[in-house]
Image 1 (spheres, helix red, strand yellow):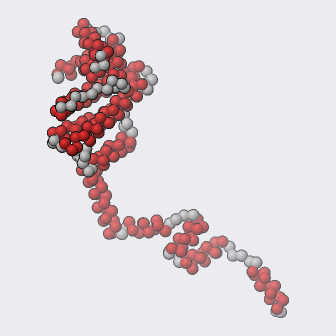
Image 2 (image 1 turned 90 degrees about the horizontal axis):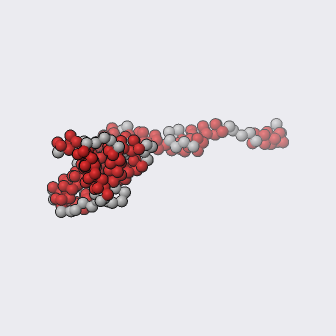
Length: 262
């Protein structure tokens, strides 16, 4: 083979290109199949990041790390458990509130009844702080209660306004009325202990909406003379913007046996 023929063959070989698969395989073998180089090649050609996943998997299943993980989970569960008994001003109180919100979100129970129960819980916390004479936490507890009650009353009013029929609205009013009454009575009792006069909201008050609906509903029913007199008293209290007192009168008509028991 002369020089000219050799040069021609070399030029032909130079134009031959290896397949992409062969290139990837060769690079992987050179840089290491299980090392960082192999992962880098795979990431470049597939767009998948697997190195950190492999490292994480190996780490998790190591006995020492598994023990630490188990202890961490137990500590976390214990923290949430202890938080349920915390009061406003305590270190774990924010954790308690997060847990409450999570339950509402998971169970999808963001209803007026649920919010009223949270209001009752805030009121219970306020009562415990008052009894324990925790002066530093008192202001925070009062604020937490007021915020919860405003939110509950807002939900009640909104749900009634969004009702498709008046009958549905009346049903909601009847359902929440006893809870509102109980909260108001406990509030007065606790605030009286603190020497604070409860302030009744005039505008946007849930009691006003509930009382108006229930008075209208009772007016369409056949009542005794005594019941009509109580209804007139409730109407007068409503006109005087004494909604909580009007609610008490309405509940006497709606739940006469419960009122007599009290």
